[in-house]
Length: 245
Image 1 (cartoon, helix red, strand yellow):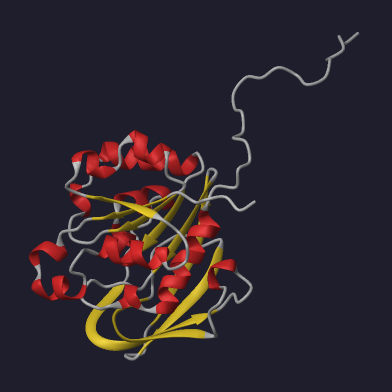
Image 2 (tube, rainbow, N blue to C red; image 1 turned 90 degrees about the vertical axis):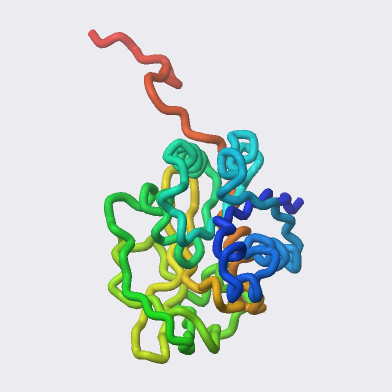
């Protein structure tokens, strides 16, 4: 029996309210576009935004979330350290996390990955991006041909200052010549993490059918396994320990 994956999409929801160019592309917010894309693949998703109480990520919300999707850019510093710690603990306890585009600079991504800066090269020049699948057997790439081509996107270029990923699913090539590791997976505690590069706020990337499919695949991949949480600390023996003579 297929289990329902409970998804929450978190978005700053600032650009869409302050920038007419972004509002024209995502009139109801990036979070709504992402939720609509998941709905096309049979996945219902709730949403949360920065300016809601507790950023919309109350303990109750996180306890009822199997996979959290994260988009942020201009207000990483406004995310409360208390909420970051709450999300961090949820991931360690098994909640999946999908970090999109400029979420690479979010507090939660940096905390989960460690001390690396998550820095990279970038450029906005309306250039073509081609995302090559480098692990065609990976479930996140299911249903995609050899590559995804985006006519206009922001460039991210190497070096990307993150720990070596456990799996590399996509590598991007850009019209200006740069390349970038664009689909990375990690595991932290019992949680699975996927970073996916595309999604600059002024481009309609999240309406692209292949991008929507990748995110839906990633949600299914990152969902908790259902395996019982390990027990830590002092514990009683499973077998009788015989006294030593």
